[in-house]
Image (cartoon, rainbow, N blue to C red; front, side, top):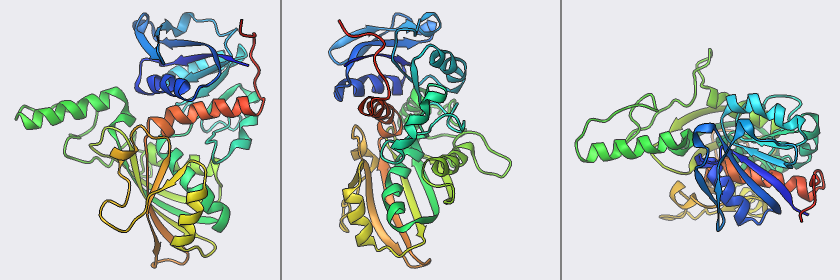
Length: 344
């Protein structure tokens, strides 16, 4: 059984990673189609050892396509995902366009796989925000055992979360600093080279940013609406890999050793936690890896039943492309989709 898959936004960072991961994981494809805007039409992208020519999204017929993984931004998704879904093609959307729609499941397969069956309401499944995805992978197994009351998280988010423009800006600014050229600020609100910026997405009326709000809303939707969460999201001069300092307050007692053992057995988690120089993960080591890495697990004596930990993941993979492909795999494994036409 194999499926015709379209990748929308195939020329972007996440789109290219989606193509890589579909090939790496041997997803059962009969055909893969790379789609983007008209200005990218004819651009070549790689799928395994094959080269695909990008086609224009606005002239493509989805009626014989089984799955569409989309990473083209919220505005494109709002316009196209409902149209694609109505043609019987299941959309897995990486943008924020449908994450908070009650008729669209928001899925991390290690966290809430059963919710995927709700996709049939609109033929759309939402991928969570990159910073939320890795957080809930680490929180879920602990919540199952000791019930989380409150989470305080500070993120250290790489520039790839802002797309190719963000990566280019860090590179050009860093080079400018070293050669004593003028540093130009275009993508970010302040210089990112050798700096950190406590501002991701737009500001809301309460002083938080939308990125921080997303972490709250998405954690509640996927994990438990009773969990209280506060976040401070910070952009840092790292190319790939989001890091998070996480403080958790539980209803039930849980020790650092117990948490360590729970997380070692949890799907999608990898514990690297030695109390010695280098005995922890950094974003550099997480790049290109599928796991959510957890280090620095320790008890917090300032609250009852408190733990602190350090969570790191490749934001282009688990935070976006990998999670989307895992959702597609979940649909296939559970027999929730069937190919529209049999492979020749």
